[in-house]
Structures are given as structure tokens and as C-alpha cells.
Length: 366
Length: 167
Ligand code: SF4
Ligand code: SF4
Image (tube, protein in one colour):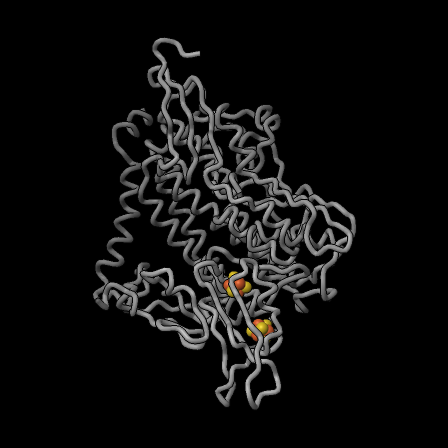
């Protein structure tokens, strides 16, 4: 019930800092948020139902369009879930290329997060620099699969094509300059007093709350839980890679920023290892002409840049379509933590809380 | 003492500004912007954008050396298209053994440029060309068929025809 002094306002759905069409219902007592509820569904397209009406092969194009900032990571989860369902082994070279592209995608996604999050809080410069590096990654996407954002990068059983000629040069060039770029962002933000005032201690989410709410990804790791599916349940070629899982214990917005910056460094490390140890060989497994599933169900989780993305698929005997297709989208689950983070804080901090969750509404609404 | 000094003198802001200044100077003092590698933005409409060889653009029907359409109406592309934007009608043509598409309609507005059609075609009779300037003023301009007024399935879309600069 409303108290006399309380006021209800809507943040969004067209507010630029809500990263899409998120509407947040806020009840305010002065400047303090007493009640906060995210309202979703403005971008609902029924991706799961569409995928049930299409063949296994066609499903990939819809996963591109869920989290459009990390399309390759979505493709990877989808491809591996299908391979699990049909019992296909992917050639090693394909695994390495997948791992490398997935890490590039993590960089692109974290860069766009850094850019927009900093822009929301008021640091315009980082936005421009982060987009500059992201552009190189998108160019590599284009060189590999012909599209920049909606990649449709993989196929069930491997890849459509091998790496294009000259790809290694692009990767080398990128890796040579990327450490300097991270140093640049950190120089701009790490000690910046405005950035620190607006992030330290803001939107706290303790480890217990995060686990209870099912939050995954950098938000969980910033609370001190070193849970990363790449390490816990290795997939693709991650078992052969040497990398750390950065964690922090402060569990606030600043800690999440630091975790993501460290993750970018680790991603660059993994890419370097993929390049060095790239095996030769085919990139596509031998497949039957038409993929027909048995009665079988799989759940396959991978570590997308935003958290655990899981694909649940049920096959039907003799049918080329999945009987049930469900996506556990990290953004959807992470958004549940928003009331916990924002209630009791000031209204200006909700922008930081939304930004730090790194949500993409295309994935939440599906 | 150190803390007071740091609060009084905005080192952090100086640090940030020096990075911005460095990049500004890099570009500003290089005389001809097109020759130096420092600039990031491209002057797009004047300087045509380059795309990679694998770029996925508009669907195009190919012809062989005799100028015949290569498509033999196996309907594989129609079946695999996730958005069902291709409609083919089988027909016969005099002096040709293979079936001939009397109708090959392509609704570009719903195409998602996934290249599944090209991948499924066993006769190499379609490609996605390198065109990305596909905007048009009318909805009809997106329905591309064998014979079109504005555009058809063999030729690239008339670039610039629909653009404001041409008016
Ligand atoms: S590119 Fe994809 S959506 Fe477009 S016509 Fe081909 S299969 Fe259909
Ligand atoms: S798959 Fe190729 S040959 Fe078959 S109908 Fe399509 S374009 Fe024609």
C-alpha cells in the first residue's frame, strides 16, 4: 500500500539507460527506492515456439537474435546441445576455432557492456574507445562467417568453413594492441573519482542472495563465488586451456567492473593459446543426411559472457524438429536480482544496477 | 597528507585527459586523414565501404556461360529457408532438359541473410552477393522476382536509385 509521501514512477520502456525495452516500476519515498519491479515482455517473439516448429538445423538463426551482443556464444551453446542430443563428436580443429571465436565474442560483449555502462554513469570517453576495439572483433566475425552481429557461426557437427586466409594476421594484430587498450580503459576509470563514487558500494548483492536467486556470470563471481562453467564443466576446448577465473569479494558495481576487466585479459590469453595450439584437420564431422532424434532430452549449459546459458531440448522419435526447446537465458535470471540490488538505494543508483547486470532485452524476452 | 593532496589536485582527471589528448594529437597532426592509419571512422558515402569476401548480402540467381539460369528447381533452398521467403514454381523451357523456374520469388524484407539457402543448393546456382545498401522507399521494392521493375534476381539491386542523394 502507498504511504502518503510515496510516489510511483516508471523507468522505461524507452529510457536509453535501460538497455532496450525494459520497464521498471519504482515506488519512491523522496529519492529512496522502496519498491522496484522489472516489467518485461516488450520484445517477446516466441523464439522457443518458433524453434519447435523448425528443424534442428534451422534453430540456430533464432539463437543469434536472442542476445545479439553475444551471438557466437549463443550459437556455441546451441550447437553443443544438438551434438549432445545426436551424439556427434566434433573435430578438434573445429573445437579450437569455436573456443577462439567464443572468446572474441566475450571480449565484444564485455566491451559493449563497458561502453554502455560507463556512458550511463557519465563517462563518455570510454564508450568511444571500447567501440573502436569492438569494431575489430566484428570485422573478424565478418571475415569468418560473413556477418557481423547475427553470426550463425557454427553448424551441428562443426563449422561450415575453415578460417579464412589472413585470419591469423587479424588475430595477431588485435592481440598485439589489446593489452594497451585495456590499460587505457583502466587509466580512464580505475582511479576516476566520479566513477568510484558512483560504483563503490552501489547495488550490492551478497553471495548468498546471488546463489539463492540463481544469478550467474560476472555478477556471481564478483561476490566471491568462483563458479565458471568453462572450468567447472569444460566444453569445447576449454579443458586444454590455461586460464584463471577472476573473482572479487566486494560484490558491488565496482567489483563487477574489475572482474569483467580481468576476464577480458583472460580471454585474450585463451585466444593466444588457441592460436598457438591450433591443430590441423577437418572442421566438420561426418553427419547423417537428415538429423532425426530419438526420444531423448538434453540440457547443455555453457558460459556466455553474461552468465550460464543453457539449452534444454527434447527430441521426438522420427521427427526432425525438437519436441520442446527451452533456453535458460542468463539475463532473464540475473534480472531477478534487480529489486534486491535497488531497493533501499537512491534512484540515481538504479541506472548503475541495471548497467552492472549487463542485460540484453532480446534475450530476456526471447 | 597524501590523501588530502590527492583530493585537492585532480590527478585522475589529468590522467584521463592526457589519454584523450594523446589520441586527439595523433589524428590532428597527421595531415592527410585518409593516408594515416590512426583514424577510426571512415567517410562512408564518399569512400565506399569494403566488405569481406564471405560477406552475406542479397540473394542472387546465377547464370552459366550460355546465359541460362543454373537453378534446376530442386526446391532445397525453399525448404531450408528459416523464414520461408523463397517461392519457386517449376516449369519447362524449350530446349532444356532440366526443369526451369518459371517463378522464383524472393521477399527480401523477411530474409535474415543466413546463407542456409546457398549452403543447401547442390548446383551452385545461387549466391549472396556483397550488397548491403538495400533500403527502399516502397514495400513492393522488396519483393524481387524473375522480372522486376526496380530490381530482379540476377542483377544487384540498383544502388543509389532509392537513395535520397539521387532525387
Ligand atoms: S539467406 Fe536465409 S533467410 Fe535469406 S533466403 Fe537464404 S535461407 Fe532464406
Ligand atoms: S537449391 Fe539451387 S537448384 Fe535447387 S531450387 Fe534452390 S536455387 Fe534452384
